[in-house]
Image (cartoon, rainbow, N blue to C red; front, side, top):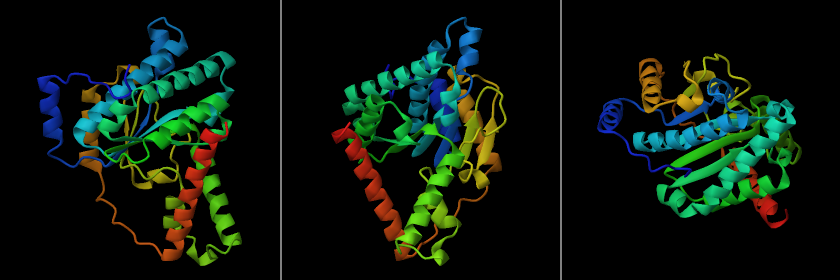
Amino acid sequence: MSWVRENCVSFLELLCIKVVKTGRVPQHIAFIMDGNRRFAKKNSVDSCAGHYKGFDKLSETLKWCLDLGIPEVTVYAFSIENFKRSKEEVDGLMDLARDKFQRLMDELDQINEWGVRIHVAGRLSLLPEDLRVLVSKAMLATRYNYKLRLNIAYAYTGRDEISRAATHIVDGVKNNELSPQDIDDELVSRTLELGEAELLVRTSGEVRLSDFMLWQVSNTVLYFTDVLWPEFTVYNLLAAIIHFQRNAPPPKAVVDISETKQEFLNKMERQRWQQIEKYVSCP
């Protein structure tokens, strides 16, 4: 199964997409892809089969987002808390990630044609070494694509993301790259790995955030649906966007930051890419 699927969109689906696009479309949509295990139980298959089905649904949803012109998508793929699940399920999820990231590398020409940039957010150091190398290769190989940015939160929690951002800022002050007066909510926001989503969708009927993008959702429209993630359809996505159109606050104005803050952020970005390159060259 391709990461970006060449699935055929029916005439009715295409018409609905065009109608929804006449309104405001979120520039960044996040998904908590919940319900894979319940889908597996419902269909009398093991949990790993449910997770595989859920990943296929991600590639399909990504295609719909491309059709809608959404430039950034973030998905919650694996929480740090998920490491507490059974060894069998965790190993299965790691194998799933290996398989899908390897397929991404095999289909790199297609990914680049679609202009999809892959960014994996989270503690990559917690991943098995071979998977960490694959993930890093995927990010490097798609680094200069700009049509759609796909953020995959893996070995991630919101609290951990905030604590890592705080550590970077403290180090910046210690190294005289920042002053205490430079620290404000805009700096914290830009130091985080994930940007603010305009719309967050959670499937399977759960109505909580589960430690996902905790800092970023202060102005985010939340949409909860009972449908299980592997059964998510383009009509569910369009319903979420219509909900967004009815409830969204005005777009946030772009905030200028000082040269000092920008240089600090640029240095962080350079260091991040250096670390990713190191994972690839020195596994």
